[in-house]
Length: 221
Ligand SMILES: O=C(O)c1ccccc1N[C@@H]1O[C@H](COP(=O)(O)O)[C@@H](O)[C@H]1O
Image (cartoon, rainbow, N blue to C red; front, side, top):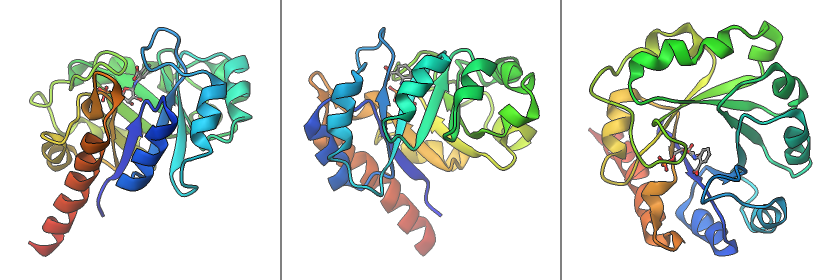
């Protein structure tokens, strides 16, 4: 099965049309004040109304507290993505599935960075339905070091029963290599489908088409 595609960092109403037309599977909104992609709840709601109902909507957060989780849960998101510190307080407040994002430069950091997760009570761990393995910086447009290892995600028990989301520095030119190396369930992109004014319709179309065409070709081979 082909990986699903998440287009992240929507900021304008027209971005909804881009993801609808390109045939994305997931889309994301960033709620982090330090990000250039930060959106207000009001703005996000307006964009969300224009997104096709079958496209899942992900609220992207960094070290959220229970109050932020409660606000986002009233907005009809399907998933909460958490970067930064994974607190028991925030996870206890979550009723939606959680995607836990790990920011890495070197895959060797994986064990250390997932310690927070492994220290949580089982009941809270179960809320996490996917792991997003991302580049070093939030929305930084950089891959982690793909050459160091391609198997960490297969050997770690942490992935059992969870989706593997490949993120960080993806674009139409490298996404198929990432798919061949890591076999992710979802590929997640933000910087790679942007120009200086924000999301770029042609780059989004090209990215989604690359993922879908590669899957079709693999089937035919
Ligand atoms: O995009 C941001 O600014 C951002 C801010 C805070 C947390 C996460 C953020 N982005 C996430 O980064 C990955 C991939 O980004 P990129 O393709 O390397 O630019 C994606 O999961 C975004 O949700």
